[in-house]
Length: 145
Image 1 (cartoon, rainbow, N blue to C red):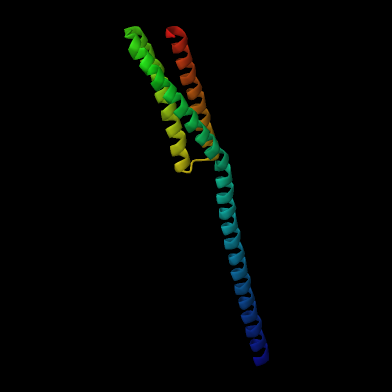
Image 2: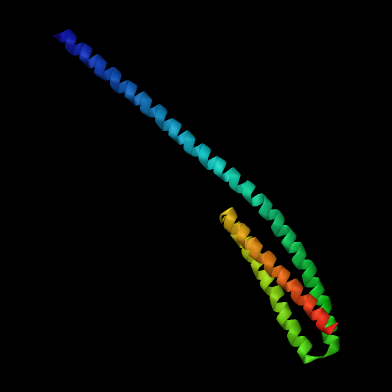
């Protein structure tokens, strides 16, 4: 009877030890998997932003070029001394300001680590607004020379 209790104790002790080891291995596996997923998610997010950084840099360059065109044309409008021309210039310049605002919005979305889709959407809006601002300047130049 004593041997049977001793064997039962050994078997129970071994089972508990084996279950403990299995639980430790599973816990390490789960933690390793979670760490790997977090790391790969971070890497894929950074890669997703890479294209957006390039597009944003292009937008800023285009904006600066268009802004200098607006500044040069402002001198022409001032020489004309026409209130209608000045009012039309101001309306067109508002489009440029909206483009700047949209570019800043896209930039802040990237800084806030928004999803790449959200950043891309904001960049597209900024591109469209920059096209509107460019067209407004062309229309103004066509109207007033």
